[in-house]
Every structure is written in structure tokens, then in C-alpha cells.
Image (cartoon, rainbow over all chains, first blue to last red; front, side):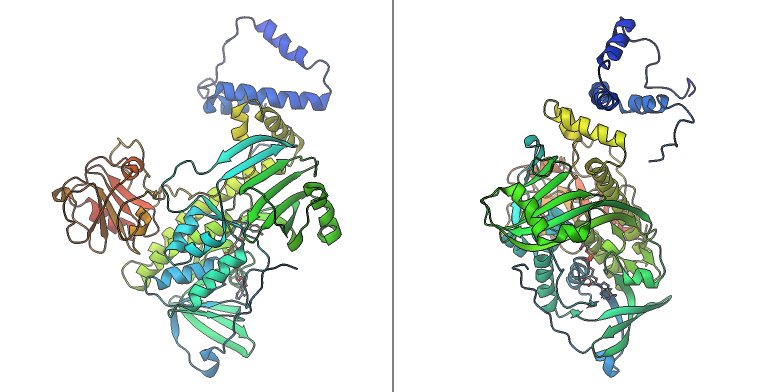
Length: 76
Length: 542
Ligand SMILES: Cc1cc2nc3c(=O)[nH]c(=O)nc-3n(C[C@H](O)[C@H](O)[C@H](O)COP(=O)(O)OP(=O)(O)OC[C@H]3O[C@@H](n4cnc5c(N)ncnc54)[C@H](O)[C@@H]3O)c2cc1C
């Protein structure tokens, strides 16, 4: 995606301590098996998505998180 | 099985079999929900019709149970709503459970001051019985049982159907042929028209049982209940102490096995415990589809209800959409038959009701995806939502066990005049359904009691001198006006101030309401020509 097409989704750093948060996320998954990870991530995404609250930003994030060529295009 | 007595309605030898042929203005194929509703709405406007049904009784089994407010409003105008409300169960509350824990409670009665409740639960066979009785008492309607349509021909001016009866075959010619013949529409098949959409393979078991229970009048939905731990269960009250229990069975269940009484009883026993007794009313296993025709008008044939579109049952949208279709079509067809509007007015039936069907299918597909997730990530998000719902109110709003039928919005219809004023804070915009409110008047205590079969001009004005000119053929309702009503106007007393509130009815505000109770246009202070020009547009002359 080009910068011009981006709008609502923040691209620059927005965290005071990025390493801390990154590791907190990874650590939270440490002793979970794959299925538990998926359940955990789903809950986490829903919590954060509601907190963000900006539908445009969320849609941009959905597009940005899905690299081109991975899976079938989502036409729904 | 079942306590409902299926009456056989009399078959009468059609006059056509004895050579009495003439072209009829309207022939309706199918006497389910849509057909009789349409026939009665036409008769209320003076239009005669013949209704054909291959069968001679009402819907076998209950099928549709949740009759929505907007359907009750339509039936009110054809004298059926009162019986539906009296016989049915009025409910407004719903409870959603995860396991045995309530996680979400909803209340549909957010606002008082409407003639009809959000929902009345009544078995489809009762609704059809009441519709049939009204049809049989109506001189303008001929309801022909055991008359099955088996062939169809069209030319630019008419359509003819071949009809099979116990006494042989005859042909019936109509200016307009209305296909209300359900999801397996014979008319659609005979015309070779496609019915594109999506089929779902999850199976559901319906057990309608009679038990004199103290069950509250609310809808209950369980995800993973202890008595059916792998899937969901839906519970509804119906009339005659009948309960609808709807078990989600998954894809691999064997429908014949599941329908066996001992297997149904085993599931029910787990649900209700050892002390409750019941008798069976109706059992069936169903899967569902979401489909919609590309056009609802094909030459002289018009498709209505399930014949034109079907949705999953989640949200109670099928029968209610069929009623809304009939209501949308009735006034347009009347105008076209009487030469007051061009036949192109019927194109708006197609565009408006296709938009509604799309909205219904979208909503019911979303509910379906939530209730029956189709791939692992979908299930993960569904379960995550349920897990969060107890502690996080936002997640409760995402729990989708069916978004219940409300009137669909028909934005951008060519019949509507878009808002010119921008200071609306509330009130139904063009393309939205009107809102009811209590009024004081000896002809009826609600706004909907004062809407006739034609267009209505609703005006908020303190002085009769400020009323706009009434376009020909419209009826005027004035709110907040002192003194006697001028000719053509009825003065309504806005007792609770709800009319003004619901319509953002500041001084000078005018609404043009269509015969199907949708808003065609609204103004803060219309100039002299505005209502007449909006009316022309709304009647297909725009
Ligand atoms: C399990 C279940 C639950 C549902 N719950 C709800 C609910 O709660 N609320 C809701 O609004 N909807 C609900 N629905 C949907 C509802 O039942 C349908 O949408 C509704 O019946 C559609 O009405 P209709 O008049 O279009 O068609 P139908 O009611 O199917 O009527 C079609 C009629 O056409 C006749 N016919 C067919 N072929 C011919 C022919 N060749 N010649 C003459 N006559 C013919 C048939 O005999 C029948 O009487 C539910 C459906 C199911 C299956």
C-alpha cells in the first residue's frame, strides 16, 4: 500500500517503550499451545479493536496485516 | 401429532372449466403469507383478485412464529392484526446464555407509545387461518383451493397460467400475475429464471412441543448449553402453551434419526429435566439457503416473498419481508391498474424490495456465520466474543444470535425526494419507515390509525393558515393546530409530545408519507409546489 492510500492508520511509533510492549505480547503466549494462542489472539484483537474504535483505521490494519499473495483474496 | 386442527377449505369448481373465461386484473399464485396479504391489501383499494393454491389448508407445521411490528401494522389495515395480537404471545425481552450463564439481555421495547409491540409470536398456521378467513369474507377476492399452476405464457399485455384442479385443467388470463408461491416457486421454474445464492449445510432440529410451563415470554438463546454442549439452542414461546425449541445439530447429523420421537425426547429431557412433561406439536429438521432473484418483475409476472428471496430463519425476516413486499406492491399495482401511474412505477417495487432483501440476507448471513462458524478462525473469534461478553459490554453487542427484523431502509429510491434541509436532528428520512406515536382523536389513538390507503401529508403548524396546499388525492394530518381543521385535514392532538419528538417536528415541518408508510419527502418549510412535485415523483411521474 502506498503512503497516499493510507490515512487513518498510524504508521509511526506510538509507544513510549516499544520493546517492553513487544515482549509483553510475546511472553503472554509463551505457555499456550496453538489453539490457545489463537483463542488468546482473538480476544486480544477484539479488546484492542474496540479500544481503537476507528473503523477506517481498523480496515486499513486488516489490509496491511495481510501480505499480498497470502491466501485467497477476501471477497466477502 | 399436534393440537392444531387443520381445517380443509372447500374446493369449488372454477367457472373457467365451464367455458366462462375473461381476463382478470390480478391473479395471485400461492396462499401462504404473501398471497392473501397482497389480495387483501388490493381489495382494500378496490382491486379484485383471484388467489390460487395447490393445497386446501394452512401452512403445515408452524414455520414462521415471530410476527414483527411492521407486519402487524400492515395486517391492521386489512383487519387481521387484532386477532394475531390476541391469540399470540407478545414479547420484548431476550436472553443470551453462554453455557448456563446469561451474558446478554435485550429489551426491544425501548420506547413506549406504539400501537403494536416489537414482536408477537404466533404460529404461521394461525396467521394463515386468519388471513384466509378475511379473504373468504371479501367479495373482491376469490380464493381457489386445490388449484395448481402447471404452465405459464406471457405476452406484452397479459400472462396466462394453466391450472390443474380435481375436475381437470383450465387456463386463466391476468393483466398481472403475482407469484407468491414460495421458495420452490413453480412460476419461477416455469419461466426458467435463476435463483442465485448460497446454501448452508448446518442442520437444525425444530421441536414444537406443548407444555403448560411457566416459561417467561422471552426469547432465549444458548451457546454451548450444558444440555446440548456442542452447539446452540433457541427457545421461543408460541400460542397454546407451545414452545419452539431449535437445536443446532451440525453438518453430519442424520435427519431421519434425529426426527425419531425417542431421540427428540432424549434431547428435550436433558433440557427440561426429569419432572416436565410435554406433547409433540411438530418436528422437522431443516437446512437453509440465502437466495435472491436478479429481478422481481419479469414482463407481466411479479415475484413476492419467498418466491423472490429467501433468508435463514435467524432474525425472523422471511415472512415479515413477504408482508412488506406485498405492502410495497399493493398500492403501486393499484395505481398502475387504474391508469394513475405508468407501469414503470413497478420497477421501483423491484429496486426497493431488492435492496430490502439484500439487507435481510446480509443480516441473516452475519448471524449464520456467528452461530455456525465455517472455518477455525471464525469459530475462534466467535468464542472470543462469547468469552469477553460477560465482563465487556462492547462484546455483548457483537454476540449475534439473530438481528431481529425491523423495517429495512430503502435509500436512494427514485420515488423519494432527498432531504433539502440539513438541520434534521431526528425523524425518519426519505426511504425510512414512518414512526408511530400516540395521538388523541376519537377515530384512533395512534398515528397509524389515521393513515389511509393513499398518500398522507403530515404537518406541524400552529396556524391553519401555515398549512401547505394538499396535493390532489392526499389526506392531511395536522399536529399542534388550534381551531377547526380545513377541508381535507384531520387535526391530531400530540398528547405526549412524542409526534413532535419522533419527527423533529418544529413549526412548519411537513412529511409526505407513502401508502406503505415509508417517508417519500420532508421539509422544514416546503415552498408551495414542493409537496405536489414530490408526490409526482413518488407516483412514478418524476
Ligand atoms: C423453520 C422456519 C422458521 C421460520 N421462522 C420465521 C419467523 O419467525 N418469522 C418470519 O417472518 N419468517 C419465518 N420463516 C420464514 C417464513 O415461513 C416464510 O418466509 C414465509 O412462509 C414466506 O411466505 P410466502 O407467502 O412467500 O411463501 P409460503 O408461505 O411458502 O407460501 C407459498 C404458497 O404457494 C403455494 N404453491 C406453491 N406452488 C404452487 C403452485 N404450483 N400452484 C399453486 N400454489 C402453489 C403453496 O401451497 C403455499 O401455500 C421461517 C421459516 C422456516 C422454515
